[in-house]
Length: 180
Image 1: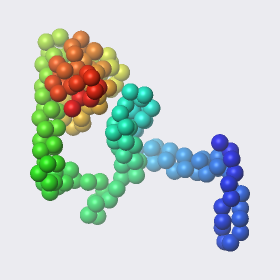
Image 2 (image 1 turned 90 degrees about the horizontal axis):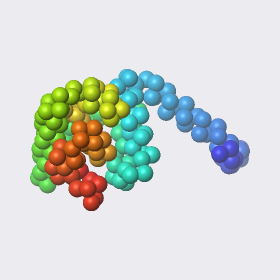
Image 3 (image 1 turned 45 degrees about the horizontal axis):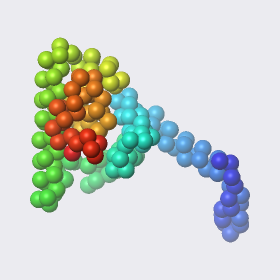
């Protein structure tokens, strides 16, 4: 890692240690991470796991990187921090709007099916959270549709509930390992 390369500064060449460059970058990223709330830090850690999951699809990995970047260095739109998704959805083309509607229907079905299965099995959100090694707030967020579960999360929840992934995410396809 500690390779050197030449950097031009003020017309003169200077050797730069790549370890120093990486350390400076890490310092900025780590500082941004420490400034995040505990919940955002947990979400970032979850996204990092996805980026290192050999079963994650390239789209899932890319989405995880985008989520990490937005969590650490929020973008600004119209003078405000972040993006108002409702505004974006209202202005979306019809094919995008249809995809959003389908995703919303899938999330609603998932939340209802998981809640019903929890009740049938006499489990609480905390029980499920413990079984899949996440915090109870993560389960609550999925069931209240504040976040969309990743494929691997659907699979973990199904295993913990002793059902097939298709029973809680009807469009799930085991052949593609994609819950869409």
